Image 1: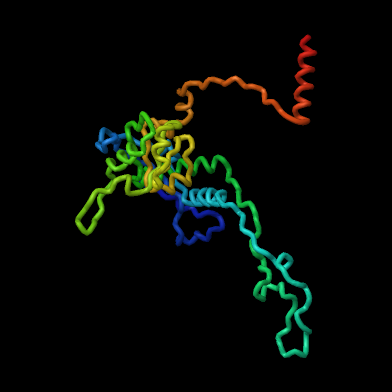
Image 2: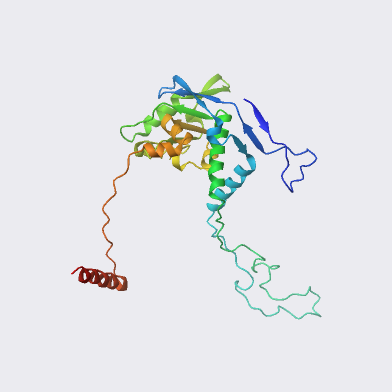
Length: 289
């Protein structure tokens, strides 16, 4: 596969002497991915055009978006007691001179056991967001990097009649992804031996309920894939319908049947809001008469 790197250094990176390589990789050649069935047998192949996923991979953007996802997961509930919050008097422990000891102030100082913490953490919100276009581009780059590293498996269909964890485990054990040398010789490595992200075309409740109890497996609709989740799991298992959705999301959404609009029942409020609601309803009835 041909890879072209752009050698132009970014401003302020200090890469003008050519010692630091570019972090943007352009992927130009088509990628062939085999298609397997539920038993692991190869039933065909698909051609992936890198242009469908942006055609380039920016390691810096992937890094920034992953950091954003990790920061947004932080609870930020850490807290320490500072000098003004710990128990103890503010009285000077002993006089400044004449005792032979080192000079000392209050027992709340951070120099003493039981004192406050100097500049310790307090509860805060770590959440921040990058531009939406950058986050969407990073998701496409993450998927393209999986195709480039041959870490994607395409399955023809993954329909399950009823939630059964045994069926998902059977599918994962049937799909082989390589060989592993052991003391007893080589053995096959399957998807059940690694972490897997299963991508479906839409929200498939049966597949989700079948796989949610497996620690190494995560299930997401293709529309909800994100950069962090794609990169965190070592393998990506996509259905053919999910792949078509990822290649052209707008066309896939247009082909989906329209969902019926449910009848909206007005919410009955209480207290002051309820009195205002009743008054407005009475005014509307009076205006209609």
